[in-house]
Amino acid sequence: MTALPRRTARLGALVLTASLALTACSTGPSGSASSDDTADGGTTEDSGATSDDTAAADGDTGTFPTTVEHAFGETTIESDPQRVVTVGWTDHEIMAALGEVPIAAVKINWGGNDAGSTDWFDEAVTELGADPADITRYDDSDGIPVDEIAALEPDLIIGSNSGMSQEDYDRLSKIAPTVAYPEQPWSTPWRESVELVGQAIGRPDQAEQAIADTEAAFEATQEKYPQLEGTSFAWGWFTPTDTSTIGLYTVTDLRPQFLTELGMVNSPVVEELSTAGTFSANLSAEQADTLDADVFVFYVDGEFGAEQVLADPLLSQIPAMANGAYVASADQQAALGMSSPTPLSIPVALETFIPDVAEAAAKAAEASPR
Image (cartoon, rainbow, N blue to C red; front, side, top):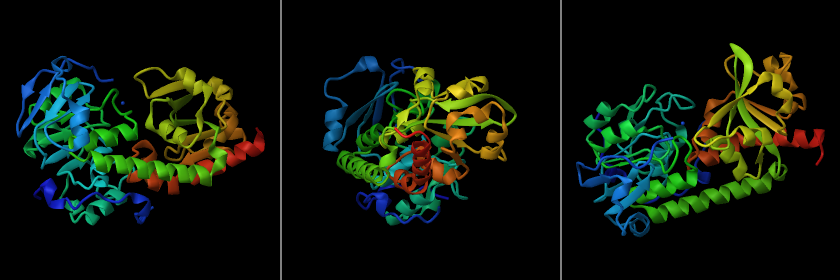
């Protein structure tokens, strides 16, 4: 299979995605990167090599060269990239939302379709006149496959929402100009990812429009489900083989960020457990009754679902479980947009996942009127 050059699929910005038919339904150090002149017209520099005329201003004009700031320093992209490889779980979708197609992307092995992609991404790529099957997919289960990426001869590598380490960054930067996440791995807010990708590929205006359209989708959902406003929540998981703890996503994680976009508020317990640079924390099952969230969202792990939680003498004391105000999430595809939000996946999650959260919020209000 031959990877397609990006421009062959460039047909203009894709109109966002509320209109797309739904066919189915982890801190990086900053600063110390070495300066390496790279292939294909790009330069990466550490943060100590700042120039005055960087980035944001250039990116706003959609012209090149443009310099993007990120956790490992600054990367200058000298000319319009034609062979973009993405290493995060959202970057390829953001590119498609902005009217561009990468030559390679991470295989979506949780919540994806049989092709290791997502239906909404494939649909967007098809609308752009490209064939999703022509996009190389690689498995990042054991980390970023640097050698495999090098063989693709990219001229830009983007990981705005990835787990890229300093070592990864140093190696990737020797292949092509590389853009990492702004601050922390796996926790870049969707707006920042869209802005960063838009700047890197020279599509800042389209990024601005995508953000506006996505914000409108959030606002419409807030109006549809007013019970979400001010409702507290916690999002967690259980390990069936060890129920002594409750896993909880901290305020840094993208799932809680998604729900707060809709007016919901983090549980005080989650706020207390959240520390800089961490996206999850554990709460002892013996403290289950202190998990003061109106709504509790959790992943169903195999056969361990709501019935098993409610049968557990400790876990059943989670207040929201006792009130029936919970979402037992078993549909990975529906949940993917919550953990990997993009202008393409957010509308899907708003349609397929949020109704269950809204129903749980209504039950919480009924159990404990505010």
